[in-house]
Image (tube, rainbow, N blue to C red; front, side, top):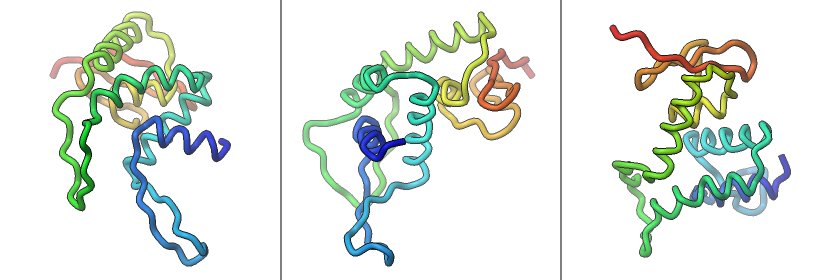
Length: 148
């Protein structure tokens, strides 16, 4: 991925980098944490799967507007977790999940991560009443979980 694309994804995702000095560089470098990297990896995967930068901008625009405040302050303490995400994004995820369940079409790892809001780590991922089953490299299927 070109460096300019990576920086654009950082900006689109609303990621605040930390500046730090590393021994191999004369100038300070921008650093991100593991959670931010996961977010960037999911966006990069979406681009590799054919989603355009313009489509990503449209998808993320609502989420960024909903979570930003007019007066932001910088603090050493971690930001509190938002209680609810943007209603449009939530509705889009619910509709996409329902379609995936009804059609049974294969989904990419990035699509599964977006739908269940967790990066799949094994052959089967159970979350929120559904199970994502891995059928091959970057090929998943979403099914309803059996009630216990």
